[in-house]
Amino acid sequence: MEKDQNSITKAEIRSVLVSLNLSPFVIALFDETDSLNMYGFYNHFSPPYHILHATRKEQEVFLTDRYIPLFETIHDFSQVLAYDKVLQGFIRYSPENLSTLKTNQVLTWDGIFVKQILTWYEEEKDDLEILALCDLLGLKHAQKVLDSIYQDLGTDYSLRQIEEWEKMIITEIDARIE
Image 1: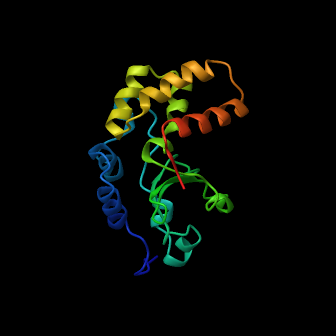
Image 2: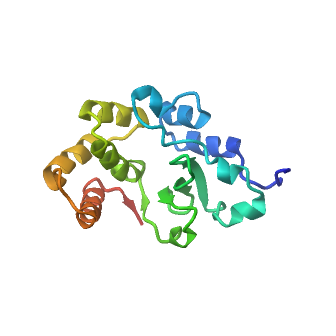
Image 3: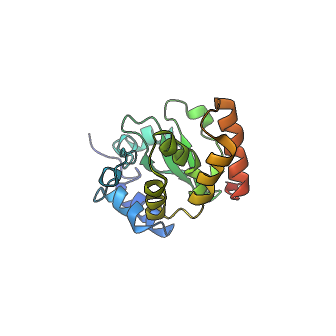
């Protein structure tokens, strides 16, 4: 299948990542020259190949003129981490449920990783490992997020409690973009 001339390309996405001044590690993840596996974590991040391999017409459903897909965050394309050019922040959305694309929260780089840090905690990753990886990703509030997990969530919590905690910590680290 031949690509359309106006389809978003891997080079364009890489250029956006560089222009956002994200850490060299983030660029290396995108370039696939580094991997979370090398740090003992499941490799959740890869370039958004499902979107890159689509034609311009197929890409339109993802509103790529506004939302630049940066990463597929699970290998089975269950989430896309994207940059919102209008609000100048980050979102995650499910390609299978695009109706939420315009309603998802737009967050800072740190904010988009709050739930990911909780996932790493739930996977029983050592705090030092989590903080080291967060440092590589250029996250400034990882320690505060981890402290909040211990203080505000503990080890036994419901989905509703997670949602409330997430709102609280996103507000505390001023990660919401409106």
